[in-house]
Image (tube, rainbow, N blue to C red; front, side, top):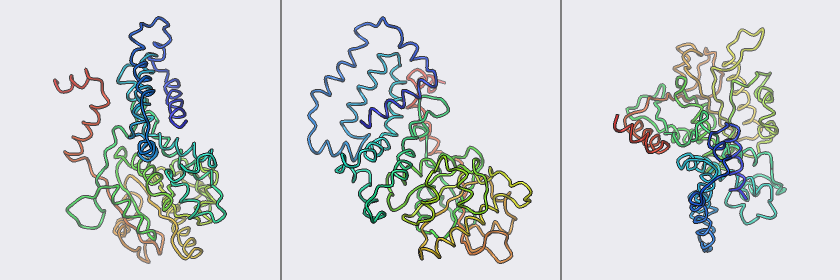
Length: 386
């Protein structure tokens, strides 16, 4: 059921993009050879004997399981029958694989009683026991978590492949702390979750991968760290500043219908990824920089949360192009320590900053390896003969 839902959605994406292969597929005269791979794939699935261990693997490994590989073969063959080239079909199915876990979660939350035994594979049973004393499933929260992973099937800039097909983990250096060895940004972000009383900043120029990181890291948290942490991703370009952080985030209620409840009841810890501090829209008749207004709101929110719950339930990670342009030079020195009394940065909140680095040779090599995998064989050969 989850696989069919995902396959339907990637087909809708292809149709919306008006792909040429769909037009080719409308040609009715097809030779019998076109159908042979599909018949073979269906026959292999029919002969496939799914034992108990493989059934469990299909739920724990999902897209990496042997059962899903059989489904993939059928989907690729079907796409080729209807006009897609082999590489195009493989990339479409690969997009589906990236998002398949999200569809599995969606099916389980839509049918919780029918799939009670599957809840442990998507961390639903843990969230029920840890967070809701009445045992009631928070469908909005779980659906948001599913949607984060499902979004991994989106075509990257209209191409056949997805963001994850090209994504290489970036490296970064602390803005103030002196160290010779760069950090893996994902490892640094995971370590920041152990410092909930601080605001963490990720600095890098446009196009350096900040938004891509937020998306990939949020899906990792959703799948691997939940229910210990619940991810929330906010595109600050769409945010309208209000009188406090909750009021500001209410401007995104279409994206997060129950967000106020998530951030006030303190049922579970949330990592809030605020992406694009430079893109905040200024408030009319207010000369204060919108970034400083938001940071003051974040600080007040975190302080109020701590006073109410006696433990910090929320971790905030903010991305921006260049914090030097937002804060005075001496304030920049506080990006790894407590702000001073004379700083216009919010008081009482420790900060940690890191700056994205350009790819080194191993990262460039890894990126090209990924790029070659998503290209057709003629393009790959032409690249190496250039």
